Length: 335
Image (cartoon, rainbow, N blue to C red; front, side, top):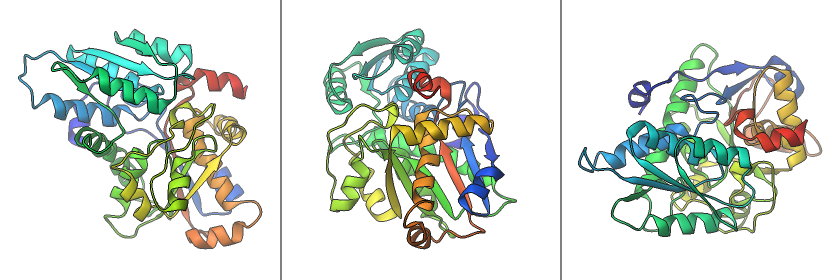
């Protein structure tokens, strides 16, 4: 996958930025932020999965065949699909739910995609996109799996592996992380994290973070079975998902060490603090900082730190999955 991504226009490893001030605040050895604010010339990590999955799906069709790429999105994934469609000379039809800011929709439209707004949740938008893709010339490129639709979401997860391979290379001199913090929506990036880190020793602790208005990972882990939750309104639009990917669930159940839900206020504070330290992060990306603060500080932190095996020499990696430009509405809310 990394060789494939290296051949795409604009590829380069995204920065892994050390922030000593955060290490001091959290009482750990070192803190690094994987800054996905500019990935393949887009302001979020999603292009890694979308590009690989589209490449794999199209490789099974005649080279001259023109297709319509269809997906549902809260913003970043849809723009990545639209960008790949434009680069490859295909059409794109992107479905967006309530709550996606007009500027995010405009960015998708600017890629040449047709956009359909859905009055409803992300889950409902996924259902309508799947229905629209049920035609011979259409390919559904969804980052959420369900029974009977798992191959393309699996390729998307494979595409995310490039991010973790980059982290390994960038940490080669610093040592292995003791804790990796991952924002979670439908769970595909968290699945990629589990797949990567549980396949090689020494394995770090893995902490997922999601909005308290859409905490389907936390609810599912608590009940030990996948459950859907009713979602609310959140500035963390890309994480506003009420149902886990069926493909991700077994990995999250068996591979995550902890999960936490954070508020919009927690995320907004993290956005501001990261900006002060020179990292551009949107609310979804800054959720990692908000989550690790919730886990390692405050009442009862000693027990949580012990459970995660976090001490004064631990190396922590925070995945900042989007830049501020990916979510202008939230940027307005935090200023």
